[in-house]
Length: 345
Image 1 (cartoon, one colour):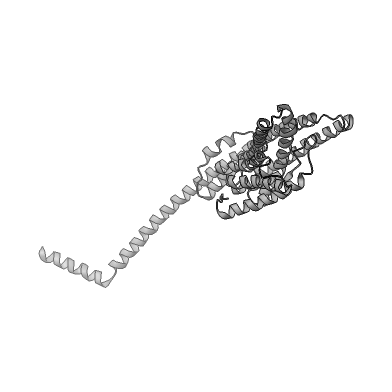
Image 2: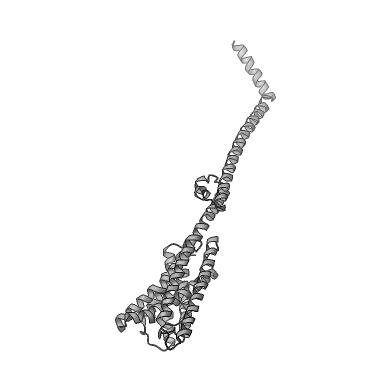
């Protein structure tokens, strides 16, 4: 996937920004518990997607323009919450670092893990940036900002980003379904389901035990951030384990490609995989031995072909010589040469 910086890219970003702005206007009526400014917005995945697929500039335009459009629909002034519009731009721009890292297509565990890291970073750093400006300008307290702005926005944006962005990239053909990607997608969504279920059950239990009048919303967001930490640890462990399983399989795949290209010397490439004491190690050892046998047979066949070619050339040469010496013209020449020798003697 080439990152496009043409007018077409800017046009796509503007259209996506308008869609994002309309979605923000609709979701502005659904504020999170204990928050008067942060709402539930699954559409936050859109600028993230634009950043990954089209590049950082497109992601920034989508996020920043969309936030301004949403405020415009609410009838707010052009300077209202300008820092949050820039923050939304950063939400779209940070995932665009995939292009800076030369990742044009997600096809390995490393690529997918980098995508998840950038989604989480895009959900957290821009929120901290916008909140820090609010603290300085509006003189808000840090504790109140953490529980009314930073944690609610970070938790919900990260969850929606982790769920929706990979789906959008799959639809766009940006993610290739290798064995590593399949395992990572399965791990990601299973972990998300488990963590979100646990979080929702905990929040509902707290709501039922304390009642909405006495519910401490900070506890909900504390559980939320703890759930995200557990999720991130789980995804990190999954990435390591999946890579450990998939890496030797990819090595065997590369070795198969080498053989198809005529390279049979694979002992060094398969040495590490062949040392494993599991089925993959056994397969790598057999594969390496087979490649060696094929190489030896190919070399033997090449030698036999060379020898046969030499024999054919000799036979052909004899036939050509015989063809010449058996002609009347050559016999006459030989007779004349003999007569000349006898005359000089």
